[in-house]
Image 1 (tube, rainbow, N blue to C red):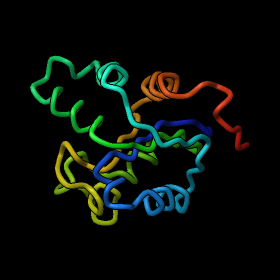
Image 2: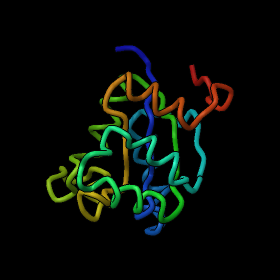
Image 3: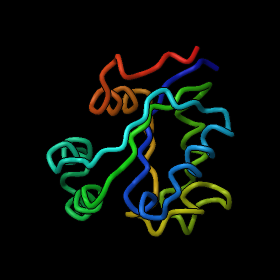
Image 4: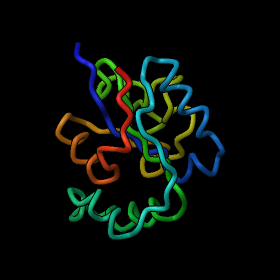
Length: 142
């Protein structure tokens, strides 16, 4: 399997729980490396652009309000099969249905406030990374 990049967000509820280091350790101890990382407060405009595919869904406004309610940690993760590995480490979207030991099972509160986001495809990863990071901000960890 080839080395690839994926995008991850540690969401405001996990930041409030002071588990940034635990989540990053979970990624790193399972073979992913942090190629870029920054803590920011998302603007409403950038958040709406990021979640544009959900604009017509009833939860869109609530999602944007939550994601702009506090700081988030944006990361580019690198590794073999990074997209799928990240998704496996996060667990199911609903923390109540996430496998024990996954990030969402440990730190998620509910479907909307599930602690982390991760890209679901190579196309999404490229789009999401480009939205938040300049190429020079991403370290080549070969």
